[in-house]
Image 1 (tube, rainbow, N blue to C red):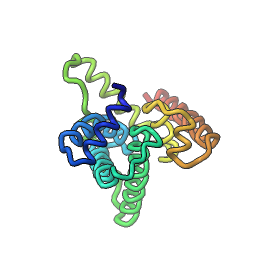
Image 2 (cartoon, one colour; image 1 turned 180 degrees about the vertical axis):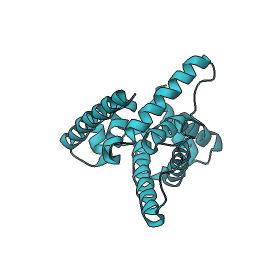
Image 3 (tube, helix red, strand yellow; image 1 turned 60 degrees about the vertical axis):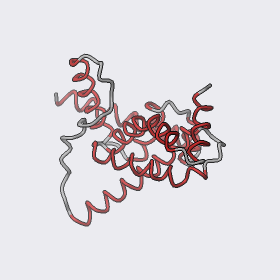
Image 4 (cartoon, one colour; image 1 turned 90 degrees about the horizontal axis):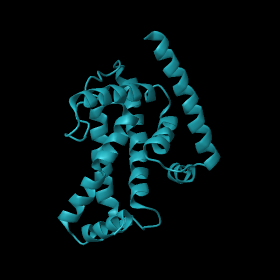
Length: 193
């Protein structure tokens, strides 16, 4: 049975009231959604908030999933929309309260991962993740979303355009513009190091 078929079977069972099927569906996607949120939002607290909002939205709207696209595409579309909403709320709150930058020391606090990795590899991975998150935080959310979907979720430009409700050319333009900005940020970091 393929992953798509398994998703469809779990969805059908969850819609028929199976708590086990719902739990299995959540476990299948929770680390992917969390890591997606971490790269988009820049800290673990917001990534956890995003993950909770995504699964709450999925739970409330699972009956609306038509199967026109893969479930993974549908759930990442929900994650995209929730991330944009959360980003806007944070920006609005920040503007209203005039609070400075939040302390982001907890960025790597609860990244789900494999516990059987060597400690030095885990530390190296955490440092690279922190650098990637910091660099992604320096580009606009619209471009960050495209980079996330293309690089970390391996979506095609056609899929990204459909998820974002933009043209394929716009998706490509945002992606390559983001890569140029990330290259500049990377070069600036290397000069400063």
